[in-house]
Image (cartoon, rainbow, N blue to C red; front, top):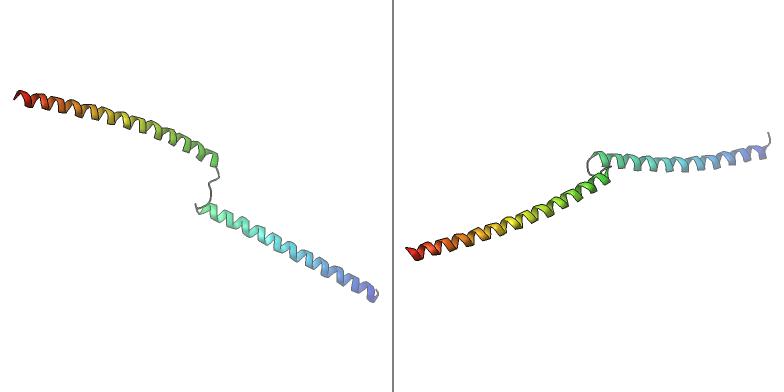
Length: 97
């Protein structure tokens, strides 16, 4: 082996070492992100896995809200009519008496 051959081998090994170090950093970063996302998800703070199901639930709850609001308005209307009838009866009784 010549000196030039050894220097070429050394340069190749150093270049390979640099590439491997960069690859290790890249893999460590990806692992850190994956572990962070997993910890975030498991903590309950992350976005749920089934967003479609939550969207369907939101739609159902919004529809239920519309229906309950309509029922409430109907009940208020009935209550107002009953109060008016009660006032009329009270006036009629007080005019008799």
